[in-house]
Length: 151
Image (cartoon, rainbow, N blue to C red):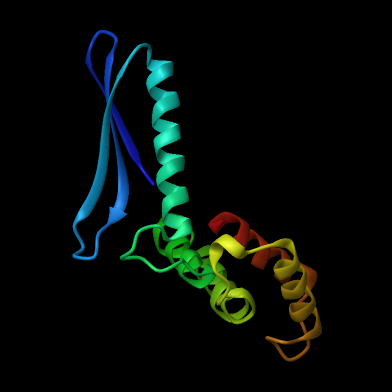
């Protein structure tokens, strides 16, 4: 989620937070006016962003279904990793996500992802559930890097 803040006049701040899109694809935004210091405005903006993220993750929006780990990781790859200057990093992370994360924990709703899912994924990767001989510790570390970066 993103938010913007601008000073309207001394001691008055306008804050706006992106809250996703509705069923028709139209952007949803929430705006507030904060009277006080810049720190007060920053604090209110963080609260609004956290609230918007919680709403999105909990699926309160009737138009949106709960987000799965696979969708969250795909969004992370396209919105963040693609911006990396190294093409090799993007290819390696994409490969790790699509071959290992999506196959092991991709169907888990993001709000329900827990340590037990990660441990089960580690066992599956080491035992060779997604590859012929199992993954090396370094490859498992890359899978963790992608998952933690997305989460």
